Length: 244
Length: 323
Image 1 (cartoon, rainbow over the protein chains, first blue to last red):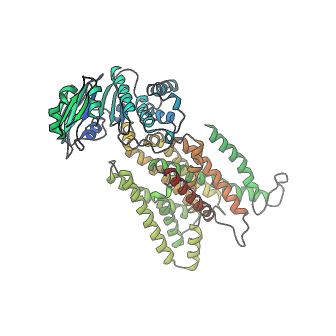
Image 2 (image 1 turned 135 degrees about the vertical axis):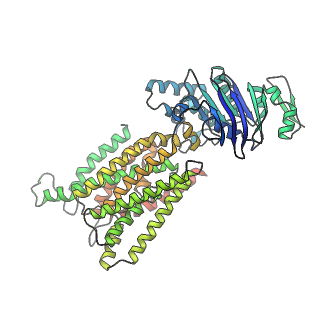
Image 3 (image 1 turned 90 degrees about the horizontal axis):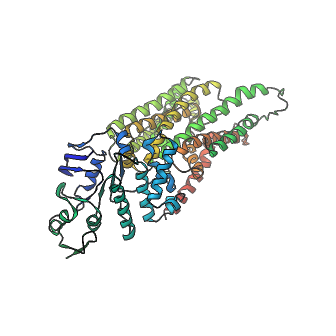
């Protein structure tokens, strides 16, 4: 089952964007500031209605909430809850589910994000990296272990250092390998190059490139979209970007 | 039912009988044949104690729900303008000299309903876009300010010195001299309001993660807004209708309770209702016992006297937390 944006148009933000996303794949959405990355992601998550065009499949909010986890950019958590309580919020769409199932999902999410030792710690006592992991775990806890599931994350790497960013990318990739469709907005082009299966480049609300990272993030495209002279160094999978 | 709620229930079970015995006339539980003991217990103290539970419970839960809804520990049920509007209704009934046993609460409930209808109208316009909640809250504050101005107008144009003193005294909020009729008037709307707030609880939890994340978890902003307006409107409106304006309970109680919970808004609702009931019961007892030359200390005044320093301390603590 694909997740598709068909000819999405939203005034001043998106202009006729069409893209299809497959499960089991990690897609990075890249582009300069204001290119429409977050807008596209919010449309795919069903949180913004486009002026024209549509998202396929169209699901009622309650059904979508159980299949699609969305991590907003803000990372806001209003109350100083513990890691475990935060993660349990991800189970809200499953309201009446069995307690055992809920516990299992929370445990799995905590251990996937390496948070078991921190489970009782309040968020105010976490480092930026730990907090970001806890926020991702919240989304993971809400996704079913089997079947249709999508993970949409808006700049999850912001405020993470190199090692934590790489480990979070590996975790997202594991999700994709286990069958989830992962779509993630990234500013760090090297992260997209090395970890994504596919890169979608947006520029001024239109798709500028779409394909495997090596082609979608070629030096030519970077020059055209970001107006920056850049060169990729290293081997595929271990690329680094040198700006000229 | 968790440990905190059980502890609060136990405290209520102790405080309720004690409150019945305490007052200007102390009643000895071992010799109930004391003069007028039955009358004092059944006609004066029992309805008063029950009213304290109903009004306090409603205000406590409404405060917890408001703080969850606005994601702000400084939010108070008064923010939506429902309490001032209900008070305006009551003031109008006093102004018109139509303040009967049923007329005054009916006017007050009509005032609360008017504010709720206005809020619903505004909510329809504000939509559920980003910033909708802020616009909605600002609208509530405008309603509060308008109701306040109209009350002042009613006071300044009051037809007689008697009406003037009645209005001013009523606005101070109290549970003195209330009857079973007041209990019957306040209880059903409060229970209905609490039911609305409990239904909103899971959505309030989701809102902890912000507007967008909450919607991605299946929260429907319109439905939540409706439940909150109805819940806060019914509990606060009923409270004002029978007791006048009693401030700070809705603000203070959730803060007292929060450290003993996991801090999710939903785990705050029931304990806040119980703690609000307990606080009002105890505060009303203390008002009754406070030695004052004439009459007794007004409950609303006493709570605001205690509440203002609490609020200040809270602000300072929050500031330290941010620094």
